[in-house]
Image 1 (cartoon, helix red, strand yellow):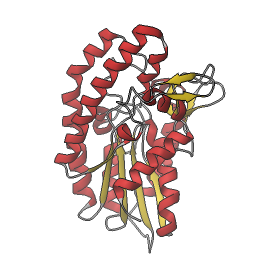
Image 2 (tube, helix red, strand yellow):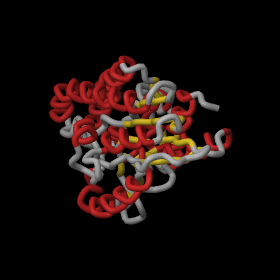
Image 3 (cartoon, one colour):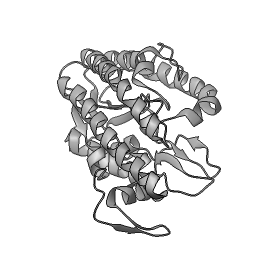
Length: 292
């Protein structure tokens, strides 16, 4: 998901923290019985949520944290390594430009880690692609939605290259799980007739884009955590009453309940998942990984 609010405020801190973390985890493995879960991606992979002042910050309540807590019950030697970058696109994941990595990019950092710990990595998760249609924004207009259509093939090509590099570095037998996305723009439904038109148009485009990502993952032999489905993104029926808001279509209700997209200022509106939403995402990741 988009990390644009984070870039200027957090870039320096990310550079320092990522450099230290990468230096520790990319050294040649002397792991003993240690095993690893490597989490890659954009802001969702770092559990980003708005704080009380409305600033998007990394938290320890992201889907990798919740998935790791569940997996560790059956894998007590498992360690979580998070190399994600808020605001990352498929292009910057390959070539850098948002967060600082000693190796130059998140992909290069991931490849170095996988090579250094080959045979000790149990799971790799990746969520990437939500920030590629940059002109869509979190509050789209019809014109912006139309401009998104032409931006998707490059994202799929980049994703294919990323997955090929990860597979080559990880070696055989490592579970790699991709992810599709929920749709924060459904919150526009609450803004009258135009908002409802935008919500429906966004859902159609998001469905096509998630199919594109799914196809790229499928070509690479990577299973996909179906977050789009878990959030019931296409269900404009089956009304749900949301406290403080009222009756909404089920898909809009899920966005209001599981993200900050419907939250009032200063914390919202914010497109990131809340802790409940991140738990839902973690459940889909665990289902796809099937490691328990």
